[in-house]
Image: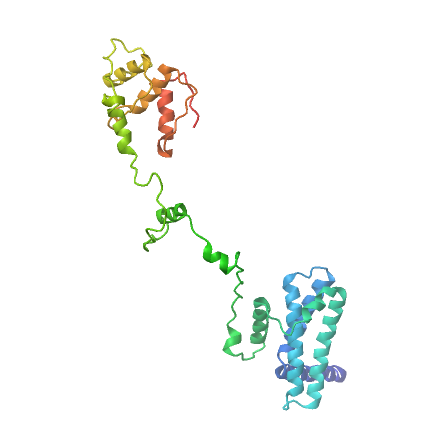
Length: 307
């Protein structure tokens, strides 16, 4: 059976819990502030007051200020309850002051009127919602501040800037961007010397007509009697033999326009070997680089290709 002293002690504890619960109902945010300020104090004592706890310190200070003003202006609270709530708020403020004494850089966080950063406003909103407060819609939705983009040049210089035609052409040719089909201004740009000059036509003509109107090309020599150029186990075709015979006789300028599959790569590799044109630089598209390396190893195994 409990003694009279134990029963009285239990009754006093229940009375204090009931009184504390009633006061928490009158200011439900104060217990949250008391818990958060203890967390900040513990971090400051260990010297680990990072950015999150610095923001937490700032939000606690502003909420203490707001809650103090609200408690003083609330006419429905009794004088005794008001004095008790202000005492509890003073206790939170005292812990803040002790924490700021350890880290004086926290004092500058209190110079502004309110916590304006998005992180601080979110923290304030979450704590108030946890306390059961009803917030207006503009405080429920918090967006990050859009960074202000400072122009690199002044507006006057920006109007005079031009985009080179090569840049515009690259942008239009980009397969990963939507094409820009806006009409381009015409007639203002000065004409260049090679405008309208088509390259391939004159190039082909140069292989047909030489100086004085005579033929620029010559017949290939006949097919050699023996194939002494291809490695063991391989054999060149007749048109390849005639080409390689011309190279052996000293000719060095050719246009290989055979159909695909007729061995132009093999002809070129063997021709370089016949003419001893080494070191040899071959410039080809990426998709055929390895094919050229295989052909070098196949037709001239004594040579080494580097891709």
